[in-house]
Amino acid sequence: MIAAFHNFAKRVAQPLAVTMIIASSTVFAASQADPQHRTPELDRLLADVCKKQTVLIGEDSHHGSGATLSLKVDLVRRLIENCAFNAVYFESSIYDFIDLERRIHQGSASPDMLADAIGGLWSVTSEADPLVTYLYAKAKSDQVFLAGLDLQFGSATSVYSRTRFPHELAHFLDDPLRKECEFEINRLGNWGYDDDQQYLDARGRLGECAIAIEKGIAAQDQSDPVGTAAIMAKNFRGHLALSSGDSLNKRDKAMYENFLWHRSHRPDRNKIIIWCATVHAAKDLSFLDSDRRSLGSYIHALQKDEAIALGFTALAGSYGRTPSAPNQLTPAAADSLESRAFSGVHDDLVYLDPKQLESFGVSTARPLDYAKPTRAQWSEVVDGLVALREEHPPHIVRSARPRQAMPEP
Figure (cartoon, rainbow, N blue to C red):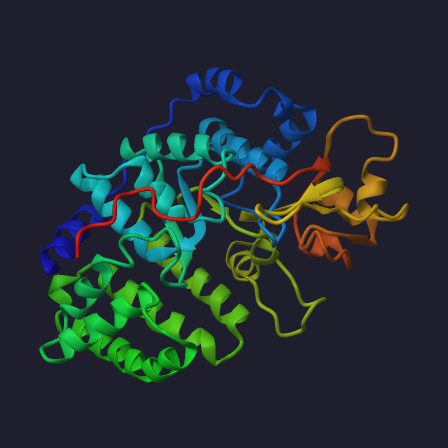
């Protein structure tokens, strides 16, 4: 397993080949983009985003917005084809994406592996299926680098995290600790506890394992020259620390650190798309909590005008995820940002650029949470906002479990 890390590290250390044929991009966009999304409003949005280095594309925190999801899928394709963006980082676990990159290099990856790495928040929907197909082809041909930012461990669709990861990290330890830690990590990834107390009893042992693994990796740094094992071990230890409090800030700080790590191990000045919820994309959430630091706040502090955060909201419609019944959006107040954005407008969507957002002043809107409209100066929260006339839930077409076959124990 150490050899696997070493071979992957050698590949990562080489510059990523990025091939963008701009002459053909217009043809692709015209033939592949959803016609309802090819509007002057989105052309304005694209013009604002194309020149940026990093774009954070948010969504409602319930992850139950199908119209937004469909639009995000189309935006990602247009940003890659028309604006030479060459990396997509998901608000998904870092572990399975690192393994996916190794598998792509080895020629043993599949679209199902990508779908499982993205995770059940999105990969269970029909709206995301074209994204999986498109990004897999781009990643396989080395045109786009894909990564996960989240330190959370053991998602429902994870395969690597729940099978090979425990052995690969425990391999840096000596017996008997190696076997003990492999057992504990595997048990956590597959939630092999009869009750919560069993997990509480195991948490201390897991923490000791995480520390020992990091020390073991540091002592064998020649086996991990680029740090793929080290970054996964660091994230695993951070995942365990989420239960000790302040999990929102810890998680966003970890995603930012992973953003920096991915950038440092890929070609300089990659043009990066970050796919996440708006509560992570936001550049300032201090109006909600003076101590709150989002992923977007760190990136904007680093890149300033080179970064742009996009949010989405809706005037009417519904949201949610089956099997629950859809939640109807409460009627937008006459003075809400959504109502004002559509005043005198007959289109199905409106893009509010930074100047327009600023001109709206403090107003009530729901880009962060469809269930809780919030009053804010939205130009300080996001750089651009897409308002949809009508939202609807995503079409969930499969259960949140791995598409890949789980390896034999």
